[in-house]
Length: 210
Image: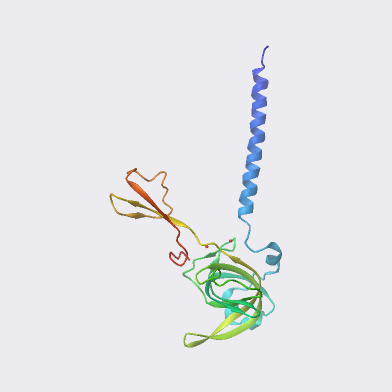
């Protein structure tokens, strides 16, 4: 039996084309799902993106009833009869709503969530992203000063996971390498390297994230 090599080649090429398209579509869908904002689309539609935190801090009463998107790092969590109040220091957010540049803040705000939040989970040092309705201003003592906190009634909250880091040490040099160092490519003295894997929370190794 004679096999048409041209036909066989075209058939194989067609099959690989289908596989390539399927794989590309799958990767694209995974990429897009991974890039979604952490706050739901319905809530985001109501957010007034024209209100900066600087403006809100200057005159919270002016924006009562407006929905704002904020994020930052928890300073304190208090459980009350009517819900949980979070004191948060504000930080910049990236395009997915993740708090970044956590060593830079324009100030603090209060956020009331009308349900119970466990203070051991929503503890000091954890990063959060919130969307809420501005309820005005709350004046409280911050050290020896009267601090004017913008006060939000939360509609949605996202708590970011503690990040895990690893470090690599060398017996020869005793030097510690950064957690992102690729152990598959940068270990010229193997097997004289040993690997130290341990969790490091945001409180222990604050780099200040879903």
